[in-house]
Image (tube, rainbow, N blue to C red):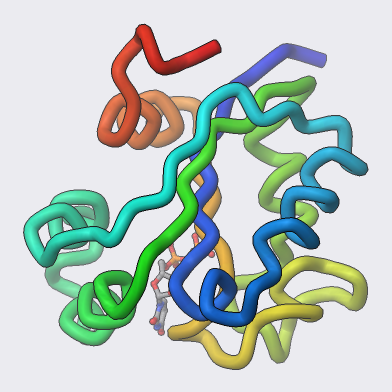
Length: 139
Ligand code: UDP
């Protein structure tokens, strides 16, 4: 096992539903520690930059509109195998396909409004953490 850090975002749908605390509890129950956090209402440019890898995908415009529709809660999670562990507790991208007991199965409505983001690999985690947090903000 290796200690890793991953970037997590609680998306506007879950923030609006007032379930930040319940999702944080899932992180803690999984042994993931919150080592940095901020709430932010993303601008169009910030959302487009974050999801730049998806800019050619047909859903890009809707994804950016959704991610800028309200504030998000952004955090860095740390723990053993944090990247895959967070992906496991998030569940599948489409909540209809997400395993029972996962965050998306319990809190998400649709593939667009799917409650959480989590980095998918060490390289993307490093880029995504640096996108939102400077080194002095990481504890
Ligand atoms: N997404 C969407 N429609 C799709 C596929 C993806 O709106 O058909 C959105 C969804 O919010 C997803 C994000 O784009 O979380 C990024 O897609 P990815 O395949 O990377 O899924 P994730 O890593 O978030 O599970």
